[in-house]
Length: 453
Image (cartoon, rainbow, N blue to C red; front, side, top):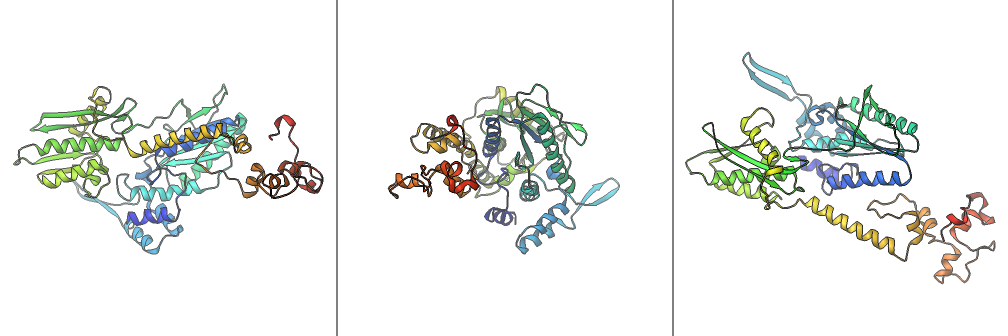
C-alpha cells in the first residue's frame, strides 16, 4: 500500500524537488548542497543572508488524520489508493488495560516515524508548504520534518521584514494542520557583516541566533558514531560489546551493526537457551525481517534468525527507563570517543555518491574556469552547478550571442557580412543598445570597462 503511494508520488512528480528526506536519489548531502548553493549565491551578490532552522514539535506524532485525508482528497490520486488510506485512517481506536478496566479512546492523529507509511504520509502534507508561492528572495527546503528558510536582502530592515512575513506564512500552514513550532529549538544563523543581530520573533517569542546547527540522534554525536549491546542474565551483566564506527557511517548502520553483533553472540549460546534481543529501532527490525532487503547487514541478521528460531527479537521504546536499553545507549555514546574501531561496516552509498559528486564538480569547475570556449557565459555564471538556470530561450540567445545575429552568422560562414542594415556590427548588444531599428527595445549600454567582448 505504501509502495503504491510512494510510486505514484514519484512517477507523477507530485513531490516538490526541495523535499530531500525519504526519497530515492535524495539525501542529506543533496539537502546540504542545495542549502549552501543558495547561501553562496546570495552572498556573492552582497546580500545579507538569514537561515532559519524550524523545529516542529512531534511532527509525526501530532499530524492530524483529517489533514491527511484533506490532502489526499485534494490530490489526483487513483481512487483505489485514496479509499485505502481513508479506510486506514478512519474509525481508529486505542484501548489500554488500566486498574480501573479498559480505557478506549479514538485516535485522530499521528503517523509513527518508524512505521512504513509514516514518511510517505508526512511528505504528502509537507508538500503543501513547499508548493506555496514564496517571494523571490525566500528559499524553503525540507529534509523530512526539518524545514529551513533562507532569506536574502540588501538591508537589515528588509531582511527582518521579509523573514517575519515568511514566518507568518509558515505559521499559517502550521495552524491549518494543527502543528506547533518549538521556539526553543528553532534558531537562525546570520551570514552578514552586520554588527547587531536582527530581532526575529515567532508568535511573540524571540528566536535565538546561533553559530551552527547540529542534528544529533541515536549513537551519533559530534565525536563520531558508536554501536553497542549488553547481555543481562539473571539480573547480572554477563557480557557487553561496543565499538566505534567510521565517522561517516549513519545511525541506522550503527543500530544494525549492534543488532548483528548481538545476534551473532546469541547464536553461539547453548541451543537449549532461549535468547531475547530487545531493539529500540523499528527500522532495523523491519529491515532484518525482509529476506530481500538491500542492506547486506540486514540480510545477514535474517539468515541467522532463520537458522536459530530460539532467538527472539522484540521492540522496546527508547529512553523509557529500560535498564538494558539505557546501558547499551550509554555504551554506544562512550564508544564514540573510546571504542575500538570497527571496519566491517561499509560506508553508506549516499556518502560515497556525495564524494563522487564533489570531485566531479571540482573537476568540472576547473575545466570551466580554464577553458577557451563559452567565455561570455563564464563571465555571467562563473560557478558550475547541477541545478539548471531558469533562462528562457531568448536569454540563452542573447547572453551566448548564438542566434540570428549577422556577426554570429558571418563567423560560421552562414552570411557574407557581419553588418546590420543600419551600418553597425550586428551583435546581440548592438540590437539591444544601438540599432536605430530596435529603439523601442533598447536598454542602457554598459560602460566600456563593463562591456564583455
